[in-house]
Image (cartoon, rainbow, N blue to C red):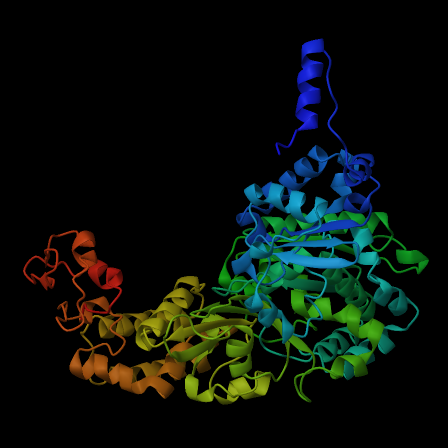
Length: 626
């Protein structure tokens, strides 16, 4: 029996008669076309538009969603409301991340590109069937499940450029409560919470505020340090990009507490998106009466100014930062007075970082006891970390103080990539120390990290495997701090340069027997004699690697050998015939023709023509180059 396509016959007949036939419209298509059906009325699409998301193409994804929704009959203005921008969700390696909420159901997609949007719209939003192959997997859930998000909770949920989105989650509620209290009561609440500054030093925030409030000066200032400069660190940037009003609210509360009428946000110019969102947030806060004259009719006047820094690492130091705001060269001063006594323009000043201020509204709104429910006795609350390095799942995480390194690296980070073993964790950036794998079960808090020669720092955490040379890693960090030294004091300016020179010759096979002792002596002198925190902490990576990996230093100096085979100058540049698989990859990348290879034959290396560039070593997937 032959089936008859009645619609096709009808079209043919109509065509012959010169008429047009409208295609049959389903009930679902009709409701979508009116813009009132479940595809529009109960639909919210959230797209990560942090720096990582934008770099991965999130704006193109947003534009394509608008185009596709409109193409399926949803009015343009309704389609625009359906698609929401959010800040970073933390799992930057999976950007662009898209969350679709429809009729009470939530699905999250990863690695979304503009060319995938049409299928998601047609099959998921219109058809009701999610595209399973693009949904997030177990690694995404493992990355998030063990975190405790307080500061980052809203960064992937609300539109950072819409103050109403912040108000809808009880934003500025802490400020309203503050204005009904005395400055003394607010400071006491912050002190009772145990909040310690998240910029690195860990000084109690409430105590700093109390010192400043005790001054009789009629002119005081409050400053937010957003000059995040550690390699691999992007915690403060993500908070500002994802929830800028939380930082503003914390600063306003701080200004009320100490009696300041003006505050500054010092942020590096390399953060254009964060600066843009701060500008939008400040403008919106002024319009709503949260900034400016007579805030919320309380009689309290306070306003904020954004100051862009030029990216000098030393300007993360309090006194150097304040000099930069004053229009002077960013160089630290001798600590004759605390900033709370004599800071910006020699007036009493409170300076905290982004993460510290973002905690304040929650502490005021929910109470000190609530906040102390997270973390440890001496390190309360949560901490945001940037997990980077040789792990499966890298990104931004927030965990309670006291969580172990093992939990962070294996439970959240998913463990090491490939089949390599974990060797060490560098915490605290270039000012921190290297913690060996044997200390994986150490709790991450201010005191525990200090006990093994490291520090919390701003929160960067770099994980390295067995292929990393610890001498070379120490050289990398000291080269950074040496380059960033302002040069004002001799111990830092000259001392870090000498340490870099010693490490360079060790990694090149020219080390001397007394170099390790010389490094220890120089490191301790620099720590005790430098003017500011940059110089005082600069030797930490070297001192900690000598403490835990002294055998690697000795192998370089005594035997001219790099145990990790990472230092190019110390490689033998030989082909191991036992492990060579005759693939020829080494020969194809050799720029000097030093690799002799024919199909189905082991490769050989001509040392006369070898320029020791390391290209063959990097190309060999079987570690056959020694």
